[in-house]
Length: 547
Length: 73
Image (cartoon, rainbow over all chains, first blue to last red; front, side):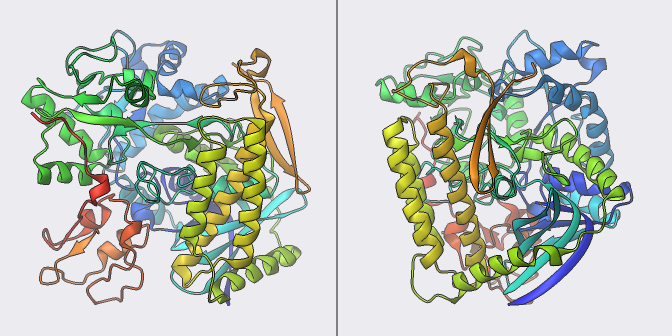
């Protein structure tokens, strides 16, 4: 296979919001920067189609008490994240500066000349989410990166990190449109690879790409990070989201309406008529409501916009487009579905893999030269922008004093990976990536799904290991595109294995981690559950949370 | 399944091909009307349409299992 060697100071893996913000900042500080993206940064990552909510603390709007702002923010879905308070303080010390930057770059952060805060909020509390017009944010961020001399390498999937001793020295990638191995020699690597879709089956079984996270983000960063010894946190903790049935989309807080039962009774107590300033926060208080109502025979539940004014309707439609939901709006138009007259059924989406790569407020991991930002660490748009920026600063600073690494030192690792790729590409018969992905989804649903127990988890793990071995020995990639998908599935298999191991180790019931063999939540475990790979052995630890 | 290209409207600029991070259009050739090699990997993000300079050259067909469920009036 053809090989290409590329040298850089800072390598940003993933060209979404976090990766591009990191690249822009590191480049400003004098580092040579490359962004490697398996799609195209113009429309890459989870932010590809746009977003409309940015958590932002503006003292002139919210008053001088930043802590009160954070307290109210954590009442909503952000409260799901078990996170050091220091992380939030850093985020909201810097969020206003970042939105001013974005505004100056052509991403409109104001609405009709004002800072507009709406959605994701309880009536009577501080509104913490700024509305912004993010439809073409990726295009704008890409331009800023290119203007600063960042080299963007699209259509290359970074599949493994290279570590020598205690430091990161680069990464290996494969081209997704030609048979080419790319070896990056880098002083610092920033992971901005997004969350982990396709581990659990979405609304339509066997249909791999009906997922609000889109199909691309397959936990590549956390799988790569784990393999080189970076700490992951709470990987076994499932999360679920809520949204329109069956068109899996984010943006529940962009809807103007009331979540109602079939008789028209509001499910929650926060709003009784469509309210564009708040949305219906009951969707965040309990994302399981649609499923619970259905199971108990009280469902379905609807997002009901009946009675909203034409002005509110225009408002909602404007923001829906910026949230990246244009395809769904076009579908509504084609089908004659009008949010003002048709209550739209909401559903609880499938489990998704929670957890993150452990970083501090400087976006550093425990591995020297390795940083992470975005949904891979502190999730959400605002955090991706702020910690992307911070990771760029940290990596550029580190690169200034780090020695130029020599990837010859890790040649064995590169050769191993190249051999695996040759095997995947060389086979004529065997399961393709989809078959492997579906087998994994089936297993995750049955053995690490809504009910988990020691016997189930151990049986599931043993079967996963059998599948994994078979996949490594028989999976087929018929072309470079399928090779990318195969490597995604190998990452998913690693994450799945970690979920089984960590779920077995968490001997309690907490949130959506339901253990009938340990039915109570153990207050002694109000901590971070850390997993780490030490010499190919899984090491776990419970770590105190700084609240 | 999506996307659908209207051959008579398409100017073969390739912008949709570059816009697609899933590479649904894998195998398309520069200067030719794109091919839709992996329709079932479409995530319906609409980015190909966002980038298309011709208003009617490309559209998404939403697959039956993804149709929105709503209460009839």
